[in-house]
Image (tube, rainbow, N blue to C red):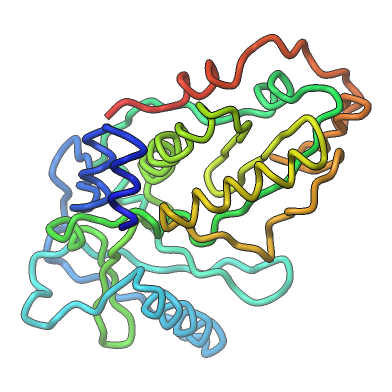
Length: 277
């Protein structure tokens, strides 16, 4: 039913094919090191435990799958490394730099803070919607999952969804979001998306509540999962978005600069940010 709703939202064959059959990696040339297994080794037990927890979470969410031993030959393997988190612990990251060298470099535009200031109007009310596991909404084509493998503690895995760290992941996800939001934006809802962070704008507090509810219902029909913990669904005239403190009552940014003229339309912005296939 969710795919039927996507089809009702857009005639875009690339997006519909990507969501139904999975994303096919767009290579500029065939990757090297096919079939050479590279093991992720964590000698520090604290780091090994952190990676085990990460893999358990990814398996539970269906983001990765275990590779059957008979299917292990022929894949392309990458390794995990860990970076310290500000609040303690470690964040595991799959090092896909070796893969990115073989992917096409395709242009696309993402929302900028300058464009946010051009679109936001004086006196507007805002809510912030955060997508949970944004990239995980986009599957990888089954015949290309072997290009996204890693091995840890004698088990082999591969990604089933868009992975973080792949250079084309933001472009693919941005295009899917553009067509997902087109119906509500065309219906007058003012939504500014930057990957998983979406800013909702409305001329009054009551309208902000209403349009946010409409957006959440639309997202639910599409199967887009909301991170309610990180979202701010109570309308406010002061929010922080893309690292900028917006104050629609004063129309200033954190730097104290007056916002530019609001002449550019949201529809014009949206058309300019939908990447072509």
